[in-house]
Image 1 (cartoon, rainbow, N blue to C red):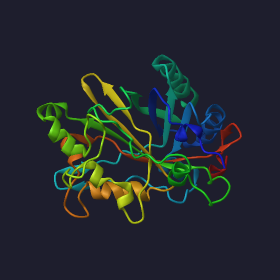
Image 2 (image 1 turned 30 degrees about the horizontal axis):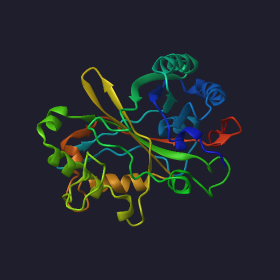
Image 3 (image 1 turned 60 degrees about the horizontal axis):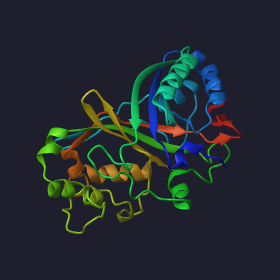
Length: 292
């Protein structure tokens, strides 16, 4: 069982997230065979979308499109794609040129429809100023949360990933004092400490992974993004299934108890998609589940 190593790697300085639609089903297998040889799972993590599986006549147990959801005043969109590539590295220029190479490699079958650049800000802070990913599981706990096990060859070592682009409202943030911001997140920005007196709408209380039954642990690999004068967070959550992510989002929307996550007061999701990340076999992607 070998997971794409970029999923479990903790260090990353820069990213590019590429989303592709399928435009030529007949060329898909050839393009994926070429991608299979290019993807090392570390500098390039690959996710397969539901529409691509359907075009290949295949099915992955547990994979489906992210459902669009709503709550009073809140919308969580679904924007699925056929193929998702996560490029990881330290040099934005290198990642740009690598993106062009991959676009050309896949051009017979896939059309590039979205590109988002991610970067590390300060000490792994979100653009709101708060440290992101504090409660991430570590070591064996990360494997248990994020990696499929016990489902056989071609599945073991794989992972499911939820990807959302969130855009922050900095005018709202700028109008808030420090206490109001801390109550929104449930942590003090000064020392990253969680505090009990935060309201029930605070994000850390809504999303406390240990408070679910069963516990809803996910492995987050989120990064800030910025384009022009807009910015936010590319939220990435890996799991052995989508169950934990969906339970957390359900509560954040207030669908459990009518209390929506205060995070929605300062940021909203623009996109949302689910993908299946195949395991590795040696130094290549294991695409046996796709018949490749």
